[in-house]
Image (tube, rainbow, N blue to C red; front, side):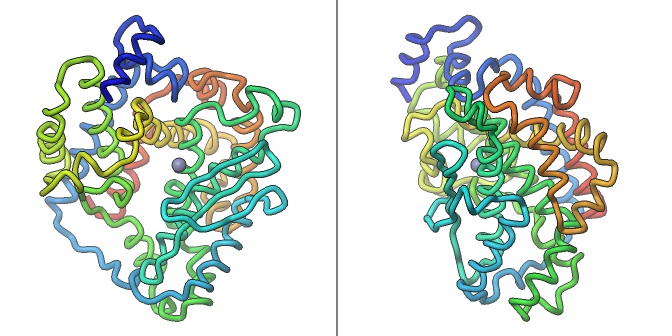
Length: 365
Ligand SMILES: [Zn+2]
């Protein structure tokens, strides 16, 4: 992390040193842009979380932790990826402890997922997420594929694609209604679970310490904590040995939980150990871009969006993402791309509206 301060100074910066690192992952984005949207998101999410806590309702997700045969999970995941638009002629799905996507051009896009016989949705959401990244790369036009703009434009736009499929589509009531019968065919232990119960279970809100296990509502808070800390460190406002204390204070303040040790706190991610400072904001930016695409692009152009999701055939939605995002590859900076696709500059309001609409219904708050 110390070395990243030097790297930023070698690259050069104008407003704050952290801008130089941010630009490596989200070209053109500045701290001044992110501070504004992230503080709105943070305050909005903390207040919704408070309302859910005050309501105190328990969600039963025990049926997701029954026993689910791994071979049947593999079969289902393969079919699901295909339905989302993953092209097996130009890609493969393998297994790894931590799922990822890698590609060699647009004709060889490889994703991994992971299986746990006692956690059905772990593989399902890993597959959906990585398929979202992969579909983006597979849809890069051949004319761009062998150029230096022949790939996804930024980590944030990439995450917008994976997280759009995973959360906005994959955790919606419509999608669950379409997929549950297909799951119950393979896993009879789900045959007595209703779509509403299943929908609630996959959206269970549970403030926790570990980012990669976080629910959709609290996930962005995990990211904002990391952003605030790494920005303060790079800009020289805090020292290295103060990070664990700062981490605990922010977790207590935003999420109401506190790590007992560094392993479940400040040391849990690979990003800082690997020197990838400036990467974290991408995940939350992806959530914001995705929600803005939904409200200001997809619902505008596909007024029957909800029926499309509920039909289980997502090709027209993938088609919208292809026409408005994927085909441009790295031609436009993220700020230009989002404005072209949605008619507006990046705003926190759509993500907050999405979260508000979703969780007020789910939790009756
Ligand atoms: Zn991702």
